[in-house]
Length: 393
Image 1 (cartoon, rainbow, N blue to C red):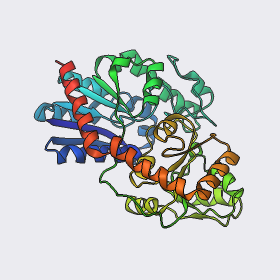
Image 2 (cartoon, one colour):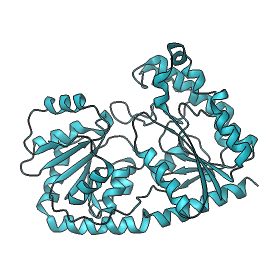
Image 3 (tube, rainbow, N blue to C red):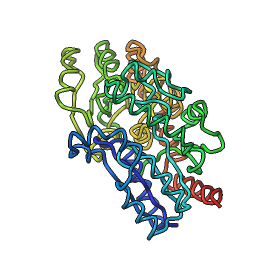
Image 4 (cartoon, rainbow, N blue to C red):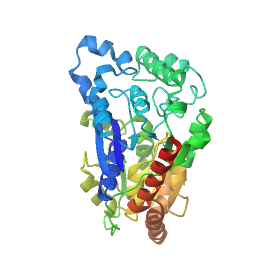
């Protein structure tokens, strides 16, 4: 099968970029002919002032910006196009190009940008004010996107344009949601239920089970407000004994130091800075437990899947995708979102019950083997492609 993968990378690499790379490698390893059409928002750094002002138009209409993609369609003729992110360099015009060449489209929905200018339903906590609205005017009022009403208005116009042209109804054969929770949200937002299937992310290669010899608790992620590092640090100020290692991927050193300084010296908290994926996996395998305090719905956190693969239980906020991926007292422990006292209590429980931690770790590994391994994911992906091709006639 000839598979075209389309993705617009963000300035700071994240879970979506990892998923794109892993799926491409998986398809290649199974004998498929794969091409990637990749753009990056790092390209925006070289734009002139006039080019920056034209971004709202560029974000909707790619024009000559997509000539290379048209050439691929014309000369290579893919059987399927698998689109991930189109914002901002690829633009929604990619759907019209695929339709013009009669190429069926599969779209992975990694976030909630179809309904929310920020893409994460987060504004000082979960916010769904723009859900179901034809134009996301509440987001403009609150300047949700980059703290700018002007940029939020441009994003809201882009979302409204998607709906006006009915691209998702006419030019996309199948949408992939990463969890059942996300699928329900997309249906609530107006997408047709029959077009949305669930396919989780996966971990490859298999990192293997760790020995947990470090005995510490671990946080891995960007130091962004929705990740709620504040809740984590407030919880650790209530604790004595358990060690917390912080891996701050993708965040500036100044921001991290400022955040740590605001909470004062906490002797059992250690910031390890940015770590490569290899080192992150090594740290996970040596940990007693991963802590994931995020307070937005999340898409499908790769670090949770990696923790399950390493046989490490997860303490996660009881909401959104985390509540679905982590089963309370089976593969980890839930805590009340935003509640540092409840988080501290759950950390104490895990720390004081090492046999329970081992049991949950074993269950976590079984969960990975039954749901998040590469070959199972490959078969799911292949079935989705075949269905999309059949629907496209």
